Image 1: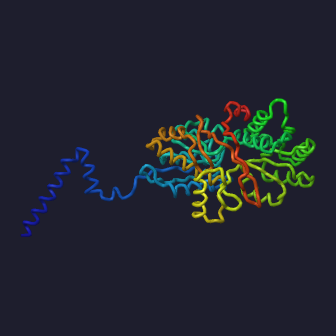
Image 2 (image 1 turned 90 degrees about the vertical axis):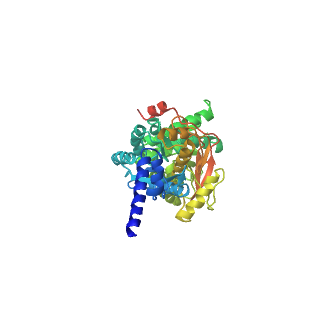
Image 3 (image 1 turned 180 degrees about the vertical axis):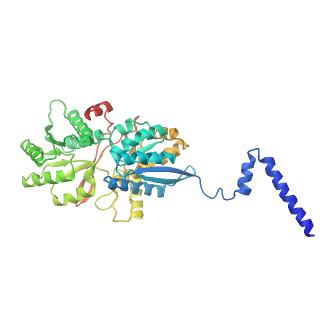
Length: 423
């Protein structure tokens, strides 16, 4: 009896082996193998990777980690696209050019579908060459240098360029404030601010026309207090009522002290996106009577409510951010831009119906006013955004929305920017 059962079992095994041999040369074997042999093969969803190239340590760590918070929040909400589960792979640029080169190379070796980063201007510029060669679409949430996207047809930015921001600040100064007594104070050899100042001055000239000299003073300062004092005396002499000063926290602290001592708190000061950082906001507690306005996407009002004039995604971002990080953690400009960079890539992958680099890149170029947290996105043929500039101010120590420009400025001609930087 036992002998008969054993014989039957052997016959069944031989038949199974014969079936496998028969179908092994055709495609049906794969289906057979999946169903009867690799039963665990379909437990997990197929996975794609999005690389995150950010300064987790070093001087740019504050911005980098804020962008990561926005990216991770977006990934927790939108973690599946076209049937693929989306995994994040983070590498640290260490806020260093040399470390960034190593970081982007190691990231590319992992073959991500796309890359987000970096918060640093120089580190993003270094990465652009490798990104172009690898053919991997990438978005920097906040790096403004126009050469980043110029050097790579695969690199995009979620923020505006310096020239676009400068033009937006100029519109506010001339049209919203109605000023024709505008002073400019800039630091010598500050290449980051150069494009912004150029954009500002060009826009003022365009708005005012040739007959009106709306810019009454234009001062360049060095690192000495004497240079700052000289510039202050000039704006006082010219009776400026608006002053564009894309300067650091420490320099503005000194300038505001001079302003207060001379009872000039009626002057409105216009600055940079860095004025939204914690150190500047804390410094301004010493100067509560001075009005400042700066380019910054404020997704919250002082009452912790979503600002108007933005999008439904802004409200969703606000709610989900509070759920993930707590009500006391107020989202920054960098966090919102990191979120948007991820959202843009997910939408591009979905629209492309593909994870091939060229297809995703082309889908990014094809966007037409796609709504994200910081506004609506359309890219030009160099990967730069075409959208209005969001300006914010401080009220009771909180960053709140102040003004959104009427016109979406295009990035300035790259040759002009190269000349401005002495290329």
